[in-house]
Amino acid sequence: MALSCMRCSAGAGNGAGSVRRGAPAAPSFVRCGLRGLATAAAGCRVAAAAAAAAKGVKGAMDAGVENAVRSVAPSKVENGSPSEIIVDDFQDLISLSENDESTVTITVVGASGDLAKKKIFPALFALYYEDCLPKHFTIFGYARSNMTDAELRNMVSRTLTCRIDKRENCNEKMEEFLKRCFYHSGQYDSEEHFRDLDKKLKQHEGSRVSNRLFYLSIPPNIFLDVVKCASISSSSVNGWTRVIVEKPFGRDSDSSAALTRGLKQYLVEDQIFRIDHYLGKELVENLSVLRFSNLVFEPLWSRQYIRNVQLIFSEDFGTEGRGGYFDRYGIIRDIMQNHLLQILAIFAMETPISLEAEDIRNEKVKVLCSMKPLQLEDVVIGQYKSHTKGGTTYPAYTDDKTVPKDSLTPTFAAAALFINNARWDGVPFLMKAGKALHTKGAEIRVQFRHVPGNLYKRSFGTDLDTSTNELVIRVQPDEAIYLKINNKIPGLGMRLDRKTDVETCPRYSKEIPDAYERLLLDAIEGERRLFIRSDELDAAWELFTPLLKELEEKRIAPELYPYGSRGPVGAHYLAAKYNVRWGDLTTEHKA
Image (cartoon, rainbow, N blue to C red):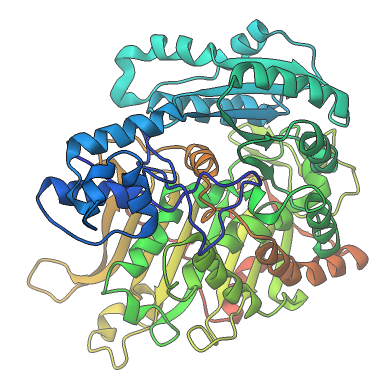
């Protein structure tokens, strides 16, 4: 029997959904499939012991494993040698764990909204399609809209797609998945309606241990109402209860702190999963692998060799009817304070002592606490205006009917941030984010310092930037990692070129999972590494709140830029202030 233990850090948790560091946890036996094998007794250490026993290897077991083995094969541990259990006995242990099965119920609050329809339900189906969900699971939609189970299933079915590599049983899988989907209509602030939901959940859970996950796909102003009602009326009584909270997490330090205090009236920190879907993207998760598992990068990852780091986000469309929501937050709150700052923290953090969630999040907090709050002179804001191109007229931001005509909300922002520690002192981290720009994408650009006394500088002319080595991590679209290096053009002369070596994800045959798939699976398994802790959120808001207040109190007007352009001219002056040129403005080969 081949046993694998791919992931041992995710716990089943206790009644509060808590798996604290140093406390025993019920490990997830494998990432997907082989469900029902993960219990406190039948974990990864038992698997290792069983494998060793199958090979005739003896060794010591800890007390927890020995007790687990005793419950199945007491005769094997009489002489202090529990490692002598044989594979047949381990099969009995597996059977024992399967008899004590649990169930997971995922309740999508705000099930009729766009996020639920376009992202959450498709992600859950993808997990089911890949055999990543538990054997016993149920999905409930909860919203104020009147809807039957059949109507919910019909709505969900329109957005489901199948994995490329397993398309042959797509329709069958869809039907099976939709049979697990149900709907309950109710008010978000009604404890009675959540008690009615609880009754329905119990009917599906039966006598099994019930684990419950609530996904709040709703506006932030009703977060606390739902958490209160769900906590009082719909929490699990014998398993864990967890809540996924979507951004925005407040508008500034005060409102964020108030939201956290409100949540913690009904939940403990380990039950709260603050989701930033950018942390679930493949190339963002690959960032720490790239750095910490490749010796070539570690000595270069500091102020000694890196001249600047650029984090760039751009969309080639405007608000398109979402202006009412966007106008309340703006591009700084919507993109920079969360998505880009989270990427920066992962990029710049010191090596954590392990891959445990708390160790990684501790290092991210250290980075954020080492940064200077943003100053107005290090920020440029802009707003797109109407522009005609190719006979087509594109609207201005204030042409959106849901946006006030005198709105000063920025749709573009560029900023220079600095980290005051020994590794990064003096290195500008430049952020740029905007809507209605010339292209769509998100990337990290690491520009290295010039070669001292470069023998070939005459071949590059006076512009040494053209000879700068650059590492580019393209987060989206067309995920890729590539490095620009100087290279001689074949021929008799000495002509140099900056060559781009491209490594793209299409090299691997498997389709890249959507970020929501990864994050939903992590929440189900209790893995918190990619979710935001409360002190991390506090530190992030402390960096941006003074700037945001100054912009709003002084009513600083954003620089206008044409729809479909490269953004405000002021962004180029900001970069030049630190002797930097934006890397996304050059023409380069893309895979």
